Length: 283
Length: 253
Image (cartoon, rainbow over all chains, first blue to last red; front, side, top):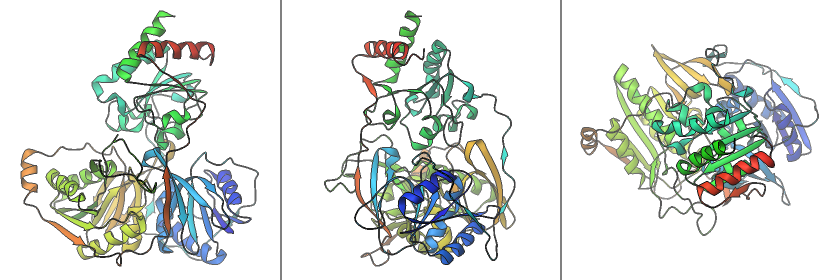
């Protein structure tokens, strides 16, 4: 099967590794243009018409999410986004596996009809290997309705979670702002930094600079204690590098238990105070 | 300013989800449903833009009959009217096509939708819709500033980076959660919603929907991770076991 890998700096090695698993005839290109959705859509469209691949592979980055669905639509296809695995059967293309219902289920997705088909792979799902050749592609012409300004960061972060040895992180399970002291007490007992999943920061219950996940900080502490966090992929990518992961959640099927080393299934409002007691007792 | 908001109805957050007998989708019979959370933020943003710039907010949704309830709730929050395209399609490309057909007739100045759905999570309906309508788009938007004939947005990038993008109107934007504070429907709003129009577009047969280029063959619970040690018992016992393990096995405390 002929595979076209579209490589950006982010996830480059992983995309190449996945492309090589998907097919033996791999061509890898980076797009030699400043990014806008319009510019990349027409550039990659031109590239596809030139290379004529059966499958086009991207990393599931914010950039890919911004233009690849549009590109796939131009070919009458749905992008199979955020793929975590591929299963090979007798003939091409493989069955692609992706998460649905926020990680509660996996889905086997079968492609129908002729190529080109479009797949983006999840960060961390393939291990980057080697450094195969990537060619830079410059389209014959470029137009864009979007005008992009240079990327920027908000004012320096007040909190650097990446330096913390122990992190206690809180999610939706905490239910309301008034309950935050419950996890604060645990952080204090452990000498830990307090962090949160996105919804907690969205709601303003904790400041944005305490957010862990794809849009927040990526941390790899010695211990990460996830309290009332179900474990959506956007959160997991920010913390699955932790040495020891502890999950406390009332739902035994929560995806967080898939990455955890230790877990307690139970009501955080009972478990967390019990933990604090236990830590004080044995200090 | 005419703003259309594409919303999706998804199972109520934290619903216990079971697979259907064929293992191809969830069993929906016993479930309750609500608006997809990122779409709620898109709706709120549309209402705030209308408050600032005047105009009209139309909510549009594709789905079975039960979806009318979620449209009604959006009307109660303040949307002016609704469009319900009755279809059981779950294919992104097919749904975007249905939305495009209905919205072409409305020619809104701005189309908003959430950045992704909590069920399929493909995160592309808005972008595909833009392509089908021939409109510019931008995704994962944190801020919208309407200027004469154009829009300036703040787009979220990875790792705490952002970028401002400008593009001409009409345009399609997909909205990130948390860019505003959601409002509740007032009693007056709920009362008013009863008299607001929901246009129902019924699709008899599947002729209107192109055959999907990908199908879900099987849905299943992910394989259980064998490494996690789960501590049972009452909270006190479980907590004691966990602390012991962290100290003497993981040696991290």
